[in-house]
Image 1: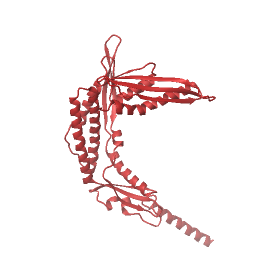
Image 2: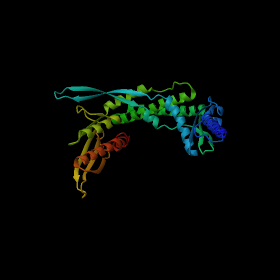
Image 3: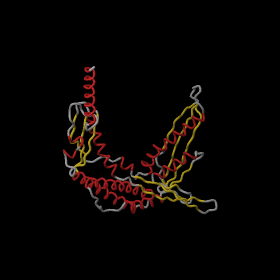
Image 4: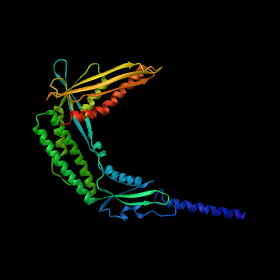
Length: 349
């Protein structure tokens, strides 16, 4: 009996010791029988926080650890840089049956999230890489605060000069469409600069007042250009949801939908057809569809390139096939039509 009790005590002590060893390990995935470098859990022991902004990452592969470290470094900006939202009031005038006008107010939100998602981290260096005994890689990513903030300042200055040039072009042109194009480019660069300034502030620990027009001033110019640049849309038997999607996409890209009381800057004709298609397959109904957009610049008389898509969709019934076809057209408007607007309508020739 004593022998059994002694063995039980020995086993118990081994379990307790193992539990303590696991509980005291500094980071999950650490190597058994080996300690991690101090910088894994405390980068400032290796490099000065005053000189570097740092983050650690880990992964099963060397490149994965580097990518994770850079991603964690980027999260410092995401968590500290507040996404700005600008509530823009737009007014759409619609003609009433008695010849008067009704004014409807719409409030849209413009965010910088898309601008931020397209940003790349500047001047990131991988300072350390370590492989633990269990195969896990650790990487330390760092940005030199002084050198990187200087890079930010140089880019901010370039954007500021570009904004000034774009605003000057917008004020000098007689074309409402060109004015919208220039101001849209200017507001994009202005929002980019705001984000760069915030990121630079994280690096330096303070904000700096830069020269040039404010985002509020440029936004006001942009809104004025949008209100002037109207688009009229015509088409026979266009489903309401498809026409609404086209309207929203044009408005999101900067245009104002014409009420018909003034001459539009751009005339747009929509052609949408859908018809049954016999594919010779039992229990499957198909719908063939075409979607085409023709647009003309009324200021110059020039026709833009035609946007055209076509396809077919099948299902167990004509009604379901028709719904699938309409869904595909909506996806086309959401993706391909946006590119068409920017490469054709919003491009200075």
